[in-house]
Length: 367
Ligand code: FA5
Image 1 (cartoon, rainbow, N blue to C red):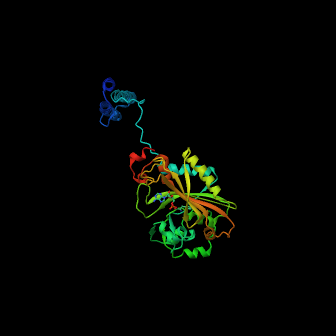
Image 2 (cartoon, helix red, strand yellow; image 1 turned 120 degrees about the vertical axis):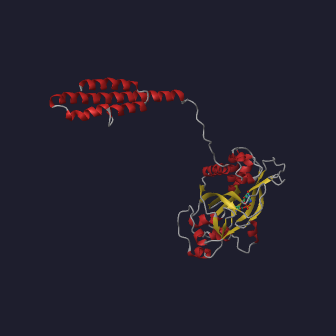
Image 3 (cartoon, rainbow, N blue to C red; image 1 turned 90 degrees about the vertical axis):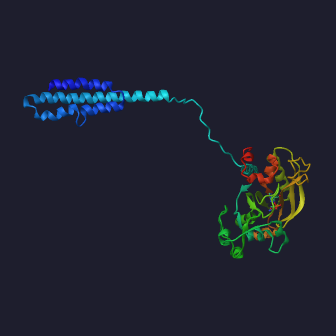
């Protein structure tokens, strides 16, 4: 029996050393230590060996089991390591090679312009507030001194909506909550709703809940049901401004405009204030700028006039103060509403307003 154990030891160690792969080695393990393996057979037969020899043979067989088991473990590690190394040799990887950069997006030109404009006004002490894009007829028109039968309603072609105006009237705004007067709530009951045609409704929404003095700007999207062309779209951004205090004049407005435009364009530009009419300001004017697309010579953007209308403005009408609940003659203020898309067109020399919402990557990638 001893010689048989010695023979198994000899061939076993040799087979383990010769195993060329982990699979090979597994076959060797099964041949010697598996359920029907050579050494396992001997271990099973130990119980039949005469008492005198059993301890010696049993001890030798168990030691051999441990020895082969250990040799198999060591050999497996060697085979696995060399396998990994050969994979590394054939599948070579250059870890210093620069990776493929995923394409990086950027802000839309209109978002950039809005942020720039907001920053300039914030620098002049204006707070930024927002209002709902789905607006009630009252705030978009009536509160701004534009009653139903008034011909100036035609100035703003409107997208009317079907829906529950109560939800809209109470829709989220940024203003600190202050209970609305029962009167104005009742007035809005049963009213029609629309996509706001300008940012001016936020003037009254804000004044209802805040007391002067204050200065605010209201950037936001507005909608008009009208034919589009190079300088008109059905959807565009406006930036409203409202400054209310005790002694405010047009001179203050002009100073604010001059400061804003010189910071925005970072160069001298020619502005003109043209007398105009808005029901919610008195006096009213349009702010025009010499067209930068054609240097005032006349092009499709400025409709061959050399001037581009950037916004409307004026001194806040007493009826608007009254709609907000302010006492007669108590406060004075100026308001303005600029077309953000038009300003972006001037700044970046964009020939057609419709490009902003075209989704054309060739256009967007230029900013
Ligand atoms: C208004 O919307 C007034 N709410 C502005 C205002 C505010 C006046 C406060 C007085 C006091 P207007 O309809 O002119 O006014 O529009 C203002 C600006 O929006 C225009 O000067 C123009 O720059 C821009 N705008 C108007 N219609 C369009 C359009 N269809 N597409 C692109 N921009 C437009």
